[in-house]
Length: 302
Ligand SMILES: Nc1nc2c(ncn2[C@@H]2O[C@H](COP(=O)(O)OP(=O)(O)OP(=O)(O)O)[C@@H](O)[C@H]2O)c(=O)[nH]1
Image (cartoon, rainbow, N blue to C red; front, side, top):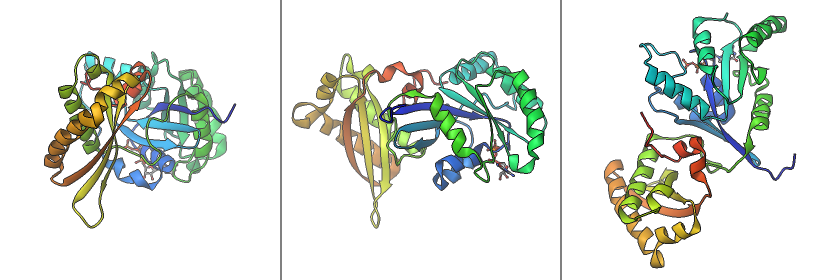
C-alpha cells in the first residue's frame, strides 16, 4: 500500500471489568491518559484516547451500554448501545486469558450479533498462561462469533500490542486526521468550550450555516506563571463559501463570535482566556456518524 494514504477510524474497546481495557489503552496512548482509568462511564461516545502516527489515526471511543449494566437495561438503551456499536469502524473485544467464559462475555457477544463493523478478539494477559492454553481458547471463541482477527497480547508487558495496532490500521479505511497529533484525550471543558463557540456561531449566522458547522477545541493550555488560559478552537464547515461567511468582512464576524464566546468561557473557567479561532473546510464531515458525534453534534444524545 502506498504510504501517502492516511487511514483513520473510530475504535471501541469493550470487555468485562478488569480484563485490562484501561491498561491496553494506556499502553497504546502512553502515560498521558493514565488518569482516565478511573473515570465513570457517563458520557456517550467520549473520546478515550487518540493514537496518531505519520500515516494513521485511531480514535478510541467509549461505548457505554455494551458493558453489562447493573440495572435492568431497557429496550431503548439496548437499541442505543447497538447503534453506537454500529457507528464505530472497529471493535476490540478484550478478554482475560486467565478467566473462563462468563455471563459477561456472553452478554457482550449477544450485543455484537447485529454489528456490521469488524470485531477483533483480543486475548489479554497472555503472560499469565502457557501458550498451549491459548489454542483451545481460540477455538472456543471462534465458534461463538465470527471474529475478524484474534490477537493474543499482554497489555501490561506490551507484548504484541504493536501487532494489534498494525492490524487495526489495516482494517481502517482512508480518512482524515480528526485530531491534531498532540491531542490524546478529551476533557469535559473542551466540549463545553466548543459548544459555547458553536452557540455564538448559531446566534450570529443564518440559513444553511448552522447545520454545516461544528466546533472542535484543539488546545486548552494554562499559560505558565499567569492565570491566562490559551485556547485554540477550530470551526469546521463544509464549503469554502461558508468559511467566508463565518470569517465575515475583514474578519468581523469571527471577531464577534470570539468576543462573545470568550466572555462565557471566562465565566465558566474562572480565568482569563486568550482565544484563537480558525475556520477549516472539511468536505462531507456530516456523512460520517462517528465523526459527527466527535465533532460535538449532540442532537441524538440520550
Ligand atoms: N498480568 C497481567 N495483568 C494485566 C494485564 N493487563 C492488565 N492487567 C492487570 O489487570 C488489572 C485490571 O486492569 P484494567 O486495565 O484496570 O482493566 P479494565 O478492563 O480497564 O477494568 P475496568 O476499568 O474495571 O473495566 C490491573 O491490575 C492490571 O495491572 C496483562 O497483560 N497481564
